Length: 365
Ligand code: F6R
Image (cartoon, rainbow, N blue to C red; front, side, top):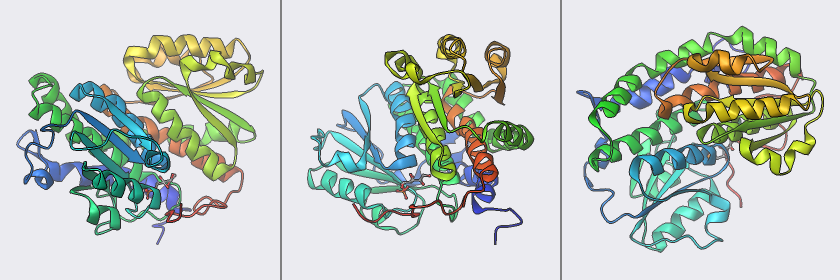
């Protein structure tokens, strides 16, 4: 059942090229992004002045990526909200807000409750769900399914990447309809979507590097993830993956925030995972790496082929992802972080597919 892999988590990580291809492919036709699911409402954005992305855990981290991407693409305020906080705060709901709920299982109680609150207060709800016919899918006005297939490991991997790609595709599709993206950039993104699964395959080829790096650091008892913009969102996910399956204490910070307190925790030997793929801010990330290294931190970096030298020269190890449009980078960038967490947990002898105290789907508040 694990297809020859030691764990479902590893199997599901390796299934990502196929899961992503299955999610993208039915939505590309004749060089365009198409959403048949939205055929009955061709003007989804009519009268919409803000978007809330609502979810829990890893799905919330997808929402954080979406916040940066959709705000830039659509030019309206977009907020990522934790479902458990959403209904106890005062979101500006009503007809002019679009609520996008993201959930693998489609049964997470907090996300369900947020959905009901949004509908009760007159907002349209679109959901991104993996499990067909689940409660969240049934109660939403529109559903976009991720075609990740069944996810068994408690720690999500292929659901996360398919949710991310689907949300980004939706953003680009809406930007196109609203005439907010140039034809050249649009065509480039469509082209890259066609080949995205192959690029994930390329990242998966470096298993030995992730394994070797994990073997070097698995004894650390505290890890910091830093990044800026969408790389910060990625750090949130990398940090969660590590702590949930390896039980190593780990935190994620916006790199610029470090000096406002947390840098006091960096001492000789502290491990910092520095995410530096987002091109507009790579220089700034380089300074942040220099900053932590001068306090003695060990740095594992993630960057792209183009900035491999600039970032790699400052780090002890570097995970390099292939060149791709900035928008789609998180789909590649998360993969080394999943495998790094996986191999660290493996080295520590943890119960990877069923970490202590955790359930696959959380149906209590
Ligand atoms: C982490 C993880 C959880 C889920 C969260 C939401 O690896 O799996 O954080 O992402 O519980 O679950 P769904 O997506 O089913 O609503």
